[in-house]
Amino acid sequence: MKINVKDSIAERLMKTGAAVGPTSQSSGPLAKLMTTSRSSSTNTASTESSDASDDDVSSGPVVSSMSSPPELEEEKVEWQRQHHPAVVDVPAGQKNLVHAVIDGPLVIIGLGSIGRGVLPLIERHIRLTDRDSFIVIEPSDEFAHILKRHGIRHLRKALTPENYEATLRSLFPTKKSDAGGGGVGGENGMIVNVSVNVDSVAVMSLAQKLGVLYVDTVIEPWPGVYFGSKLSNAERSNYALRENMREAGRKYRGGTTAVSGCGANPGMISWLMKEALLRLARDTGVDLSSSNPVTREDWARLAMTLGVKGVHVAERDTQVSSRPKPPGVFVNTWSVDGLLCEGYQPAELGWGTHERRLPRTGHRHVFGPGHGIWMDRPGGDTRVRSWVPGVGPQLGLLITHNESLSIADYYTVREEEVGTTSPNGGGGRVVYRLTCHYAYHPCNDCILSLYETNGSGVLPVKKHILTAEEIVSGNDDLGVLLYGHARGAMWYGSRLSIDETRRLVPYQNATGLQVTSAILAAMVWAIENPRVGFVEADEMDHVRCLQIQRPYLGSVECHYTDWTPLRDRINSFSEEEDRDESDPWQFTNFLTR
Image 1 (cartoon, rainbow, N blue to C red):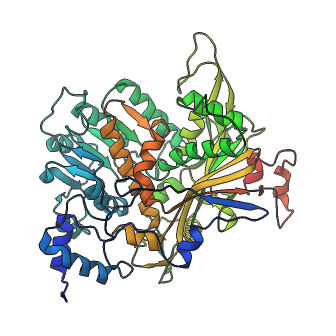
Image 2: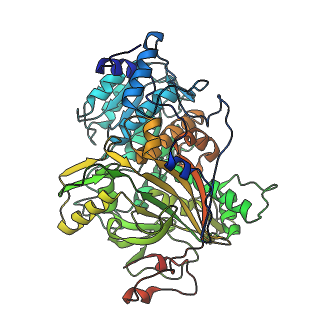
Image 3: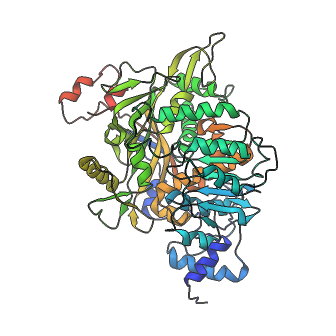
């Protein structure tokens, strides 16, 4: 039967929640390359995999939890053929899994690349008992047609310090439990904050009063902190923002769950960190049969036992557009505003106990637990040597990220002393902490955009986020590079291609899907654990979260390498003054000048 597919059909499919592509495995040379074990004298890899039944969570989403009416089935298949040529049919015997139910309102703040991308995942995997209470707050109407297509209410408003409380209160008019107590699961509703310039702690605290669940991807302040601020660089740091969040969270212990900083990184990367430690323990013969890590202290002692000196959040984005970047336009694969904000904060990292000296522009904080340092230079113009699979050695940007601080804080071992406490739950003198920082190589268009912005000294006016339709090839490889242990260095993470992303979901590229699938996992975990107060990804059940997210991560791989930051240097100029030949894993060996 030949069907003339029109926009109205696509709209009808979207309104019924019909999936636009199955979660079949990638095909072709790239997919075969990604799922084949690698080995060489300097690099060995293995791909994590498991057998999955039709009902197993690891089998990918194929049909929406809101199934299509029978009369639309043929139209759906034809629509998929025309809009996603790689998809010829919906594989038999597979289905989406509804992971959780929200009985109250669901309010999403922001409809940028991440806000748009998370919509189909919510529709596939979370059942809303009151569809009319699904609301997106977004001041722009640029993508209002998407909300109309999905039948989602659009509140066109910018949240400000003056109006956010009244606005959000009006959307959660009734509570099924006392304020601050939280309902069972999602019965009081949920706020998902994927915006910029909306203060995370303010909204998290209001969510406690309303008794609604909360998830965000970053600790965001109100406007005026990142640019044009009279605050010192230390006060503009993520360390300061995180300490403010942690302090606020102490008021709400046992309150409604509020997940802070849970996208790809921060977020997923903390769950992969735990899998990586377990893999390293297995591969180095550390017996965990009688001492499987459970608590924060257990995980920190495991990292210390394994001899892990530090971890890079090592990322390489190789996605390429079909069009060259025009001069004067800042191009990225995710939020340009988000990248600019963190790129012009001071470079930051979690500071390990093995480090011998601060970098030349490094400073310790004079408040809080002291697990991080900041540098008197912007992260978007600070480079570190790192390593990722496929590419090998690379220079990454030392952009500040919350996980750099939360991971260092989480993997801290203290010598217990009677009568003393620490912010991470232990007491006494620090005897072990690992170093942690971001080492990010964004897409080539973004690198050029940063170069232009740094050169001009003026923030860009024209901004563009690459869509899945524009990108012709490439991956986002995002993982943890654990170093300093018995095997040297190990990268463990997600390698997701744009081709597979297009088969899985609409509205996003590979970078976005790693973020939005983590948001989905955080939403489900919050519904299942509704009374833990403020929480970070490190403190969540990594097994459950990755069980939800893994179908969207492409190939999850483990790579060992004998690379160190002292290898294969071209020059011997003044930066060599900072070399430490006695320990290749000193931070000063990673940092370039």
